[in-house]
Length: 97
Image (cartoon, rainbow, N blue to C red):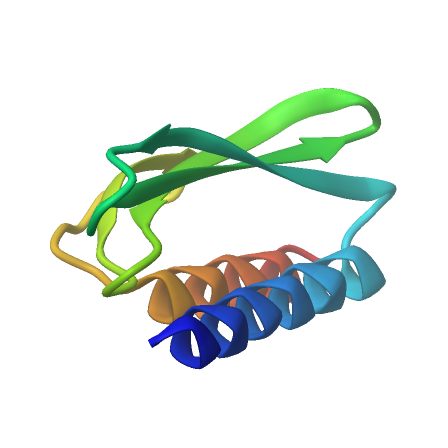
């Protein structure tokens, strides 16, 4: 189970780094927003462009389910998985470029 979490976190980091490559002065950070110590860990990704926050994505680490998000003018659609969400964000930025 721990290996699965590690792989999911690495996939998320890889996609965020891809966003940095294609974006305009994009940075990001991940915060552990909540953990009950047993089976639920909520992580929050904050995305910045030119030091201004442009997005926030909260998701459950164990299953990748996105709980809530906002990213620029993207239309919300829930439920969604974190990998799909980050791919949508990358696609949004590629269209804007």
